[in-house]
Each structure stands twice: as C-alpha cells, then as structure tokens.
Amino acid sequence: QGSVQLLGAMAYCAPKHLGTCLPTIVPKIGEVLKDPHPRVQEAAKNALSEIGSVIRNPEISQISGQLLSALADPANTKKALESLLTTRFINTIDAASLSLIMPILMHGLQERSKTNKKKDG
Image (cartoon, rainbow, N blue to C red; front, side, top):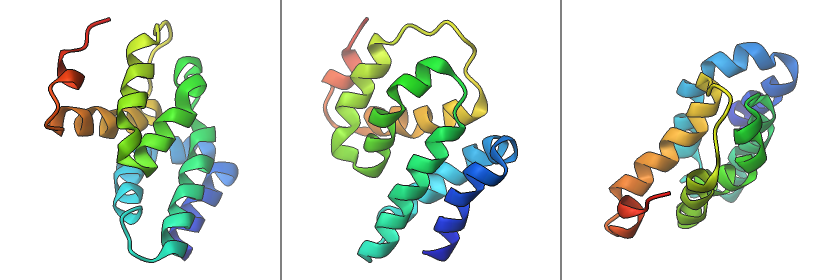
C-alpha cells in the first residue's frame, strides 16, 4: 500500500521522470488493483488518478477519466474503447499516454465479445 502511495506522490514531485517510467508502472498498478485488500485497491486507484495528471497529450487528458476508470474496473473497458474510437488524435501520443491506452486496448482485444473488435469509426 505504501509503495503504491509513493508512486502516486511522484506525480507531483517528479512528473517528467514519472512520465518516462509509466509504461512500466501502470501495468504493475493494474495488478495491484486486483489485490484482495480494500486499502491496497483504494491506494492503487488514487495513484492512478494522480498519475493521470502527468499525461500531457490533450486528447488523452480529455478522456483520462474514462481510461482510468477502465483500468480500475475492467467492466468499464467498453466505454473507454468507445471514447478512444470517437477521439480525433491531432497531437503525438507519448509513452505516458500510451501506458494508459495499451492495457485497455489489450483487454478489449482479449475479451470474448467480438463487437469490440469489429467496431469501426
């Protein structure tokens, strides 16, 4: 729990350094979200929301709430995928932004439902 809280606090102390490490950190926090202890889960959710403030891509920042919600609860993956599908990307997507997008895309592709895989924009 303390480790996850520390990662969340890094979003304010060293946002640039944390941004480069997010591709490694976000999947690990995703694993911590599955911890059976409620305090650990809550600390992971708080860390994800604090980490969301590191995202500099304007398009991802607009939908970061939905992305973070899908990371915290896979049942929200469909809504996050729909928001990604309707988003028009103009700016480049950095590693920090991809660290939020990729776990959701991977989860969406691994679902049994083919509707997520067949959607077109």
